[in-house]
Length: 599
Image (cartoon, rainbow, N blue to C red):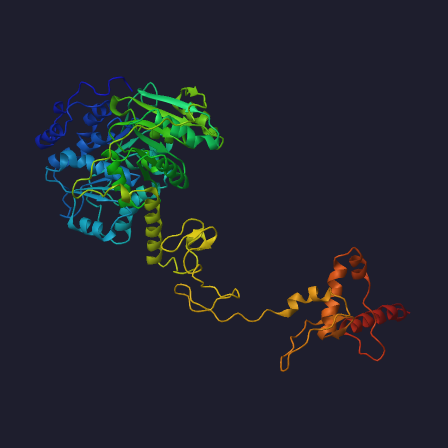
């Protein structure tokens, strides 16, 4: 990317609809970026485009201008019904879809077009009603849209004349490609439909999709000296695992006041890192798949408004989000995929601004570094981890954030990390219960095992020190260890039967044989003893228990092998032989009689 992010080409030089041009100027867009200058001359006449440009170069505005201008200047297809969409824009993530919708509303709200935003995690019926009312442009994620198209016949794409695939490489990574092909087959033929595809990388699989479903697309590539943005300063440290949090706090204290994003690889570490930063006094927001969609949107708005200092996120926030003024990006974990590294650090140094990208190559993720450096075709400068960096500097007094305006999200008391994740778990539990996947008071909840276990508990008393603060602490268990009381919706259990004394027979048998038996109370029924056969003879009662004890003691010594190898004792005179003895005698008689029968 050149040092000059904007070209000398202005939007007024293109044959745009006057209302669209006025909307662009009102929103502050006058000159084109390189990808916009390449895309518009090809897309405005109606040709297909497969464009490649790094993140933060204005791809979104390029296809929005082309789509809106077509809808304003060309009539709809003859078979279109009033409620059918004329254009479809697909994005891989909810955050990117929301960002595209926000950009479209900046200059397209007063053009007479209706925009519908469709994505998962929010009210299903409300979005269905929005689609049934009709929309000119649908901006959607594939999962929720395909549900409306395939299962409920809410929306029809037979008259959709423009389709945009944004971040096509990410569509493959997230497994959406089958859904994309399904949706494309529900649209008009590719010779009738205009398709615009944009991606950070035009890999072989992306080009295969383009040539399969597009009409002779024009391949447009914005050449860059480096894959990463030119004005991002990259740096890497090699900390031990237990040094990552102290190093992060030390570096943050040396860039006080900077708007910062911290990327981690897993949802579990989002919570762990966010809690550590919150304990250090930072106002922290989180973006991960565990956080409900409405909460994610609220936290993102607060971060954009400056009410939150830090945003800890997984790769769900690595693509498409444009947040003004992000000066520092930390890769707390190096990503496994080199492309994800480029998209993460692309949150800073956008549109020619400067920024810092700082990465930690710990023992767990350092193996990703060679692939990243090979992909970006440059060596990332390294810095030593010193004792001074592991010590956070004292934080200056900071003014409290301004109170939110009326109608905006609430104050900080609702945004503590504990509250965010507790609400997330409660929402997930409620959703599982609504779908019938969870039973209150016990049972299993999905693959995670018993509900209320291992930190994923929600909606009930929490465990502290191995004990439950709720009903168990109130004495729900009886003194004898059993419980006949109900738990949740579970019916009361029957009283536990008395323990079988035979289970303790070996221990009792280890006592001297002369030990007297315990006295039996009058009218008390004696417990039944285990029965064993020894040499074909049944042994009952106390004699049987004694024999079992002797057998157990014998098995604990090496002599047990020899004892086990001895043949069974012959039955006493006058006793009927056992079944095995009779079979053995019969076999012996057959063997001894066999030679004489041959003569």
